[in-house]
Image 1: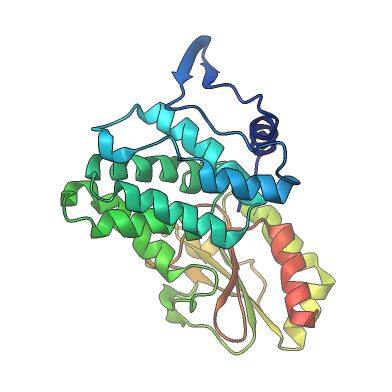
Image 2 (image 1 turned 180 degrees about the horizontal axis):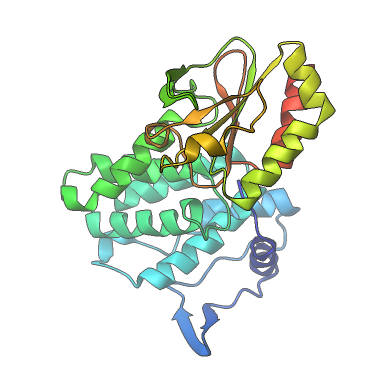
Length: 306
């Protein structure tokens, strides 16, 4: 999950009752004002601290929104409402959050146009590159509902079907998928989880962040010790298979598993470059799409059993 400082600002404003019902954004010296779809709720003063207020807002945010009476809505306004809705999820009870999302989706099931718009808002705010945070467990609920809706044409589902396939196979807690790859010497390889921890980096050897990640992993003494004692495997796979990739991987550490793959992105969610995954001895995904420093810290913690 990625978080921006703006998310906390939104939450604080909503809790205090100072949340404006319009959102102004300035781009290339032009200002666009988005009018709110409805009056956003404000948690009552007698509701306790941040977690309690977050629970209340998550549960009551859509009380004034009735999809059954709408043909369509302004997408920008819906995106803004969705941004405000998801902000308190950072502190709200998980089950209450899931229940609120389920109720929202259920209310839109018989209105495919609104369901499609809600899914677009969820994609913008929970999945896309400009999302305030990534919450796959929430976003996939919208994908499930949209793909099951028989009133929506296939043309509206194609992109979301691909997203759903990648997310479903690479959620935290899911069995890590296997995939084929090509080794730098040209021989075929096949990745499948082993019985110890595995840290995978999917990246491009030419990208600066990938180079820095390689340096940090290769010079970390704790990572080296974990590999020497057989408690950790480190892998680097590039999805760039243009001519010259073999030479670019020639200087990667000998103890790493490295190669090129054009199939991994079909079963792994690779929204970042580099994209890191941690897989446990039980062959399940423990973490995904996290920065290299977080990946190093987490794999040390997990492998130590603490």
